[in-house]
Amino acid sequence: EVQLVESGGGLVQPGRSLRLSCAASGFTFDDCAMHWVRQAPGKGLEWVSGISCNSDNRGYADSVKGRFSISRDDAKNTLYLHMNSLRPEDTALYYCAQGSETYYKTGYFHHWGQGTLVTVSS
Amino acid sequence: QSVLTQPPSVSGAPGQRVTISCTGSSSNIGAGYDVHWYQQLPGTAPKLLIYGNRNRPSGVPDRFSGSKSGTSASLAITGLQAEDEADYYCQSYDSSLSGAVFGGGTQLTVL
Image 1 (cartoon, rainbow over the protein chains, first blue to last red):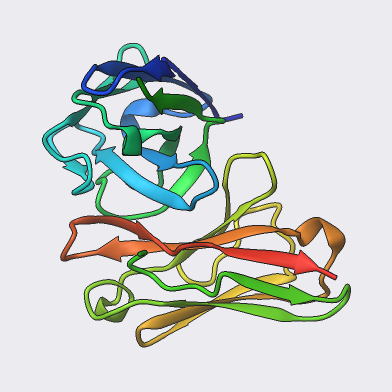
Image 2: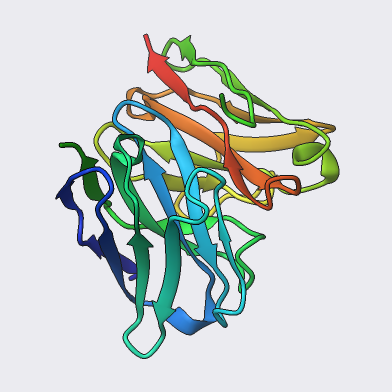
């Protein structure tokens, strides 16, 4: 059974940093692209970032480009999202999702975690 | 404003058929990129419902079906049941944005 467990969310002041983690199990982690998708309270889904299975290719939504960085540790089956210069509009539930392909630009989100809540407020 | 356009809400009585549209443009659906659909039940994470325009993952009832034509796609649900009440999202890839894009979501109410 595929399991994705996010952690690292919390309350943070504007301008500060946070690192999210996603522990994966139940599939061959290094065979799949991985993604972060967020959902602001009462709003829809927004793709944040994706990383290909070999870590050579990474992509970001315009709203986070230059502030967020995605990475993965295949030895630990863990995905990360490093978030810098956080803004109130980054407040959301952040989901980790397994990509269906090896390349992050293609495919769909096969399995999802339960999410970790990030609140940016002073 | 979302890159893919969905109606904010649809409704239907038990047993009826409803459709949810997803309209894109020449840089996403119209460019030939696949459309995928997700179901999000209240208070839960999204779940893959349809992939590759019309394919159902194992465990998804055949009451759910997807189609795509030109710059649009549709999700059809037949034999509506109370447990189908949820938010539904379409998703594709956009070449101008170089990333995945979602529709704004459609809230389905079973009357």
